[in-house]
Length: 492
Picture: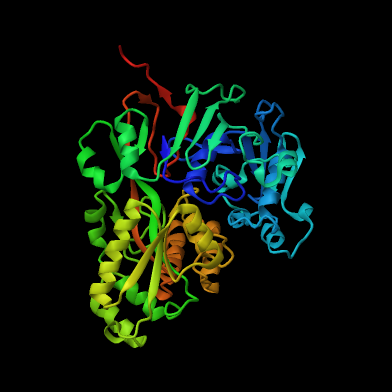
């Protein structure tokens, strides 16, 4: 298989991207994992139970799960990992993921300095007790995600920032990182100690291939068994028996740094959103993408196609004129940024043309390599930038929580107290109609009233899979559990 860029990190407290996540999903195991229907099922935790009206969840761990160096995985490894994630010194962008845990947000903000007050406790080597601020029925889904995986305190303290290198890292998943030639390839080998049994595949070669055409050539010559198709190649392979496609719980958007002029003016942001004819995107990308002006993706509770700013070039020009830029006159030089990838290049060219045609403004686009791009977003987000978001767990809270004011993944420099309150209330509401109404209101604030970002489309995964690869199942979260795959012997 291949990845389009070097994983920025394999420290699962610090990773934020899908490349790192897909690798860590196969190197590590958490308390729970997903089945084919995206329901959380036991992994390191053999079972769990809710008590105190849903405010306490107790995980009971298996006693036959071991680290790659032979030590047993315990509840203490989970407690350490969670508190390391929340420790402000770690500066983890995903710290907010555990803010449903009692005192987690306060500890992360430095309001509480005693980690023992955080509501996660290893009661014994095999029992982990979690105290929640409020009943959260989807919490077992949260524990499928990489930032909640256990960690070894002794390894991290001994090796520091280099603890994820192959010679130092210890993992508990179906595969072990045996080799990492940076910018070239990673090699995963089957873990003989894995509690579910040794995987059927002995070795996984993961090549770093930035150029899609190169990856396609490697697939055709048999060097790759699984490939994500670049847009230009999709029409050619649509009738190929190796072709597989599935809509994802993944949105693609352009964000504004709302503190940077001219996008500190909401009318400018609304104008840019109204000026895009999203219906043309599937024609450009050719992969069955679903255009959208709302944020919660189709296929997830909370989706509402009527929300957001629709294509209206006349209104766009009017708003821009009200902001002081009639027919685009006097609009300052602006640079938009995206990470280097063929699909992103096509969308950038499309947006550049749309804003030129409908707003009379020239936006310059710049692409950067993935790690550099992420670093730039974290240090000083540009005025306009591309990002996407795929579900970490299949609930609208995961998409809406992204843009609360305390989210480490909120690159918009945008904060709205009413939006924050709505998102905080969402997981507690059990009535579907009331919950839908709440998310409708929150989405409207995000995409229309404040127009802090521009949703563009819901992504579709388009793959090529060799016939001898068996057990491969596509799902709407792009989860790739290699331990469930086996290779059929080649026929003579």
